[in-house]
Image (cartoon, rainbow, N blue to C red; front, side):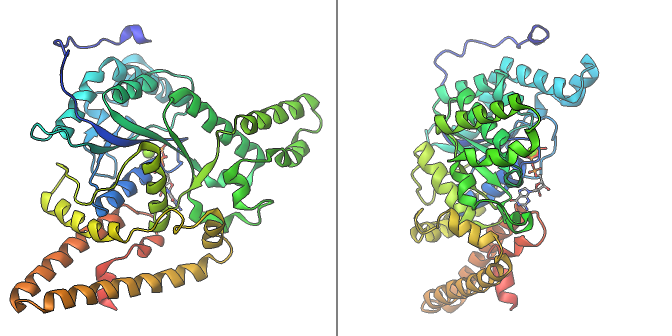
Length: 405
Ligand SMILES: Nc1nc2c(ncn2[C@@H]2O[C@H](COP(=O)(O)OP(=O)(O)OP(=O)(O)O)[C@@H](O)[C@H]2O)c(=O)[nH]1
Ligand SMILES: [Mg+2]
């Protein structure tokens, strides 16, 4: 198929200076929550004072819900490929991946436009949202080579591999997910953070045979074989195959999972911490960005600056047993306690800023407070917009909600 793909003639690019960036390549099967996470992470990082760009590499989603800095559909559309070459959506997706590889300078130029600011080499932050076709990350090389080229240009990237946590309810599916994560790790040669997404739905899964920790640590997987054997008892070869697969995951020891509830700021913060470690990112409040509205970014940095100074460490953010406790059988009670705690947190913030501003010039202080409150509102509203699922969005601290009380 590559033969049908031509690259436009490009002038010599030798010696061209490129932008540098930290970033996340979000991969995973269809419906794992990649685009929702891309949107949520963009809003979350912006609120932390780390504005970032989202690049949509999924040609099947021409209009993603997040503000998108680069969109692959500006280069090539899935529909046109399907029409022109009589391909189905999956074949067309592979064509698009190959086309992107052949026209990689297009992507590099778009990224450079975003990242090279007034001649300075300030590292930016880029999130890549990708299609759910897993073969793109397991046995097709185009995306791999795209990532390799970006890495060579000093993009420090981590693959964030999302898998729907629902798979832990079925032993054979969970083993497939673990194998898939392992395969993608081998193929991509990037630091990898494997994530069980939608963990907020844990309480709906019914009773599980093992604690959540069992699945996240991916150890002693042979215990899963008991339930697999029930399905495969008539076929001893299948039993042996299942055992071999489980042993492969275990022996390699490279697969374990973090957890994610995209609307939960503690969960997002923990993932940010882990990802920062994986790419060597050092958080600096007030980072520079050309993305979107400057005022909002400055204000976001201000809000993020306060937040970062008091930011919990990984240990403070709890471990997987806490996640199980939070989203398991006692979820409703935790929801309520968390709402109350965040209401109090917001009140304290408001009281603290009232004191600070109240001591100076009254009118100017009031104006400043109003502006700050507007900016906070925008930032947190942004976070809320990033969390489009029903119900849980209220957990994001919203100034308006606290004021309304
Ligand atoms: N409860 C819950 N639902 C989520 C979460 N993240 C995503 N979802 C939902 O999962 C569904 C799929 O999410 P998407 O973000 O479109 O998934 P995707 O991986 O981008 O899907 P494709 O692009 O088709 O591969 C949507 O209905 C989301 O609202 C989460 O953390 N919790
Ligand atoms: Mg998507």
